[in-house]
Length: 249
Image (cartoon, rainbow, N blue to C red):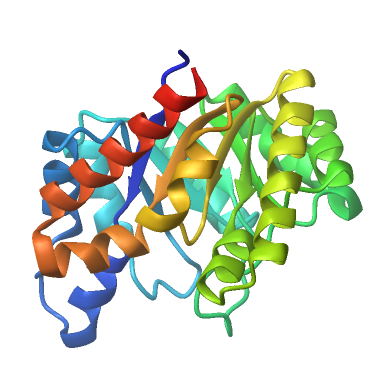
């Protein structure tokens, strides 16, 4: 049975902190709790508008974390410079629009191949694992492989949204597409991750896909932590992931 890693995204701890200013709740403290609860990595998205994670958070995470940091970032010169200064374990290139609430859809790689290939080359040379956050779409996966990405993270938002809406036909179609494209990406030699919108109710079918090596989950876990605590929330997610993996095997 292939191990399935859990990356915990701590962005929305910073969202709560920034709602009032000050230092609490601390994203770094959340990262340490996630580490103690069995997370395999920490994800943080430093957005251009700094709406949640701050530059100081990234500094503190790099200084204190024992777990690998997955640094989510837009494909801009500013973010490339920050990543090259810190050299996190992984960088995940995501699309970013100022007006969106959260990351919507996957990165358009196929129409921007040349620029993105040149953009990620210094990151790879610096020792960062480069991941591209994309839709479960064959042309985007093929383009990600051509530009030299080592990892693709498949966007699970449409699958989760359909489940929440009770649209089982769309949900099942989206799941089938994710499964097919996970197989395709794996065949190209890419490591396959998945994330966006996953909950206790939706994680099982995704965790059960044999090609997927890592799930990145944040908003749901931070919300669930309000009611049961962060460590129990993470432990329950791990339990469901592992149960799905056992069924697969």
